[in-house]
Structure formats: C-alpha cells, structure tokens
Length: 191
Image (cartoon, rainbow, N blue to C red; front, side, top):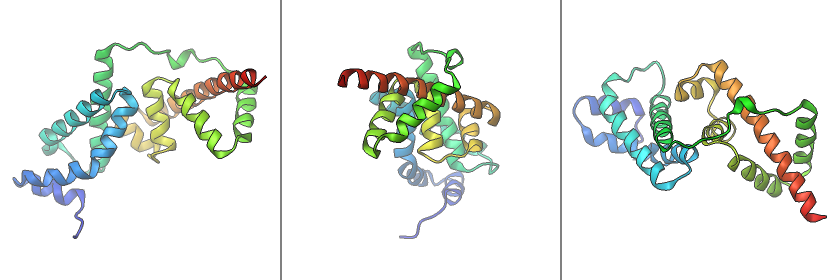
C-alpha cells in the first residue's frame, strides 16, 4: 500500500474526507500516548489527554500552517493538553531552579555512570528519571530518546529555544544529582 504524507491527509480532511484523519491517528497514536504518559505518569490520564489532543487537532486543522511539520504542531497540542491535565491534578514538584549541585559532583557522578555496564546504566537512568518531575522527564526523553531537535521541543513545549536549553541543562543536573544519591545508596547497601 502506498503511504501518503501528512500533508496529503490534511488536504483530504480539509476537503471534507474526515476518514483520512484515521490515518494520522494511526500514525501518531503511540507517540501521542507516550508523550502524555511521560508527562502524566498515569495510564488513564495519558489515554484521555492523547484522545483530547486528537480531537483538538481535528477541530483546529484548518488553522494548521505549513510553517512547521504536522508532527511538531500536533505534539505541541499533546504537550499542552497533558500539562493542562497535570496542573488540574495539582501535583507539587520540586522546582528545577532550586537544584544545587557542584561541577565536581557532576563529574564524579558522570564518571560513576560511565563505569556501569549498559544494563546497569539503563536501570539507574530509569530510576533517576522516575525521581524527576514529569515535565523534566518529558524534556529529557524528547531530546535524548526521541531525537527531537531543540527547535522541535521549543515548538512542542511553547518555550523559546534558549529556555528549552536551560531547562534541559537544569533537568540533566537534577538527574545527575538523583543518580548520585541512587549510586551512593547502592554502594551503602552492598557494604
């Protein structure tokens, strides 16, 4: 079967073929749920946020402009929908501006992580990420795991590129701080 581009389906939807939207849903459903899950960390909320984002995208499709890709435009909707849902839950997280970690602590932790084998490294990184706020996790995972560019993350999160860089840097520092604590706890439990 010949795969069509997002732009093709958008043109068809705008011409009145609402069934073409199912192609976009099928293409982006897993990624939308994944991003929502990273932010909300609750399956039902993530499913509802992803579904709400698709509805919002469909209803706003006429305002989509080809200045960005559909993927980036849609993921901004997913991100904003998930953040709105997160705010309504009124979860309180530690502010990333409050993170205090020295450069020497960063170097020691990075060296310790580098010494781990691949499976242990993945295990500890997962444990460290789980200790971050959902927004911090999402930013780091979009950049490091999902290979979004700074520009794409900026468009998705509604932040300036500079702000994205600062938040990713601070989130990375906080992750390293958490890894430092985890690794110290592991060493102590072995002794």
